[in-house]
Amino acid sequence: EVQLVESGGGLVQPGRSLRLSCAASGFTFDDYAMHWVRQAPGKGLEWVSGISWNSGSIGYADSVKGRFTISRDNAKNSLYLQMNSLRAEDMALYYCAKDKAAGILGYFDYWGQGTLVTVSS
Amino acid sequence: AIQLTQSPSSLSASVGDRVTITCRASQGISSALAWYQQKPGKAPKLLIYDASSLESGVPSRFSGSGSGTDFTLTISSLQPEDFATYYCQQFNSYPALTFGGGTKVEIK
Image 1 (cartoon, each protein chain N blue to C red):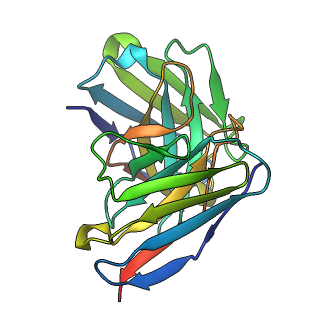
Image 2: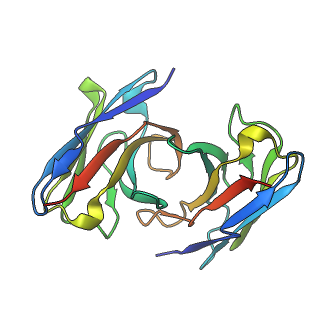
């Protein structure tokens, strides 16, 4: 059974940093691209970032480019999102999501339950 | 970035009804469209990819159609467990992946 378990969310002040993690199991992690997708409270879905199976292809939404960094450790079956210079508008539930392909197809067949990031002073 | 406009934003329907949700792209995206279902407090679930391919395990009452700029998600006979919010998502313009605003399907 595919499982994606996010962690690392919490309350952080504007301008500070946070690192999210996603632990994957139930599939061959290094065979698939992975993504982060977020959802602000009561709002719709927003893709944040994606990374191919070998980290050779990485992409970011314009809203986070230059502030967020996605990475993965295939030996640890883990995906990460380093979030710097956090803003109020980054407050959301952050989902880890599995791509349907090794390269980035860009749609998501499994999702974690999310980790909540709250940005407030 | 490619914008996706879903309509309606919400609808009320009864069990057994046929329900159609539309998604219009601001420019052509071929068949690079997916549909997701999200229930309150839960993660989204993939229903349809490549505009019309049914994801494994998804009931056959769900179907998708369209290409270019106009797409539809149809639920042929609405079931109690189908009351949820539905999102379309385009993957034609990576890394600018975008979602529609969502359609909430409520019980009449």
